[in-house]
Amino acid sequence: MKIKSVIFDMDGTLLSTLKIISDTNNEILEKHGFPTHSMEKYKTFVGDGLRMLLRRALPKDFDENLLGPMLAEVLDLYHERGVGTIPPFEGIRETLDALVQRGVNISILTNKEHKYALLNAETILGEYKFNPIIGERAGKPLKPAPDGIWEVCEITGIPRENTVYAGDMKVDVVTAKNAGVRSVACLWGFGRKEDLEALGADYLIENPLDLVRIVDES
Image (cartoon, rainbow, N blue to C red):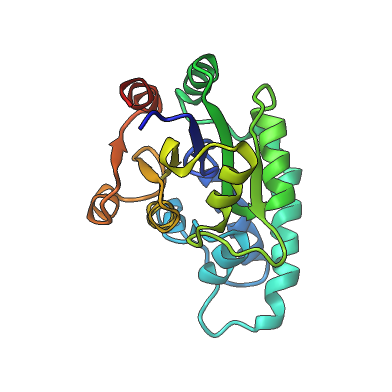
């Protein structure tokens, strides 16, 4: 079926956020006397929102009461460092341009907090009209629940059979499968190729522009 809608994950798919995520979390961990982690280790923490990422970065026996205040510190530092300095991955702008030129709807579904998803998209990729942008919202299930993809399909009016979900993590492939849409595993991000293959991603791509070829061939 012809692809008419591409839903993107954000961190690790559109935006290269790993450095700012690791730097800001490590700074707050160190401030509170906790061990820090390598960027490679942070790849195993991402995918389920910043709260869960910080929980994974903290020792197993940490005081649960610290999580909320520390997360607020991480977010303050994250934005103090400058959201506008986060780069999109190489080839992302060219890919978005090509999809828009072809009349393909582009949207974002991420487990990042909703207001920060909006801020990141508007600050870094503000020249593009993503319809819609959906992040973590109170009372709404996160990926791998299919609800976000179904909501995008309802908003756009584009059926699931004409929609693909592009992401870099195992949770993204599972989300697509749960929602009944085709999955595009993006190998430039945080996930491991063998994990994405094992889950049966419909497409595995090394370069964002490969997505344009998939759309053209659909």
